[in-house]
Length: 157
Image 1 (spheres, one colour):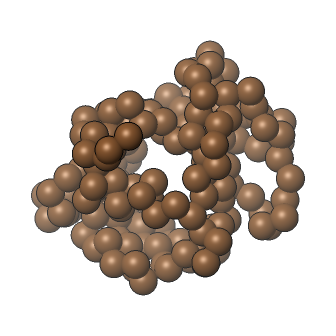
Image 2 (spheres, one colour):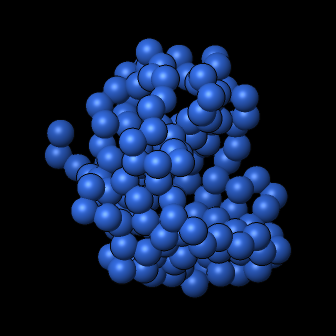
């Protein structure tokens, strides 16, 4: 399957008041190779393993395959992952006909908040909420796999 999404920073925490759901996510990476990223995730009480292919040049789309796995298997696989885990709270916010996934990062990435919207095509239009800021689609440093290697708190502002 091809995933098409755009990624943005936020200008405020107003999205929290509009959130439909709020879920803790912990994830690690078995591979952060540009051609194939392999992620293990705990989303609440559910486990997942995901393989993502290389992004297109504009960063808008890439292959993504995901399978639900038992929580205990995800926990065991997380122990095999590279050192820095991603820990975040995900808010799902409905805006018009789309649902934005807004990630408020914790731990080594505390202070970073990124909103993503999945689209059906690269040209698809969507309503922009007032809290949506600078677009960072395609900026590799905002990929979770990269945040696990170069956390937000190590960036020079």
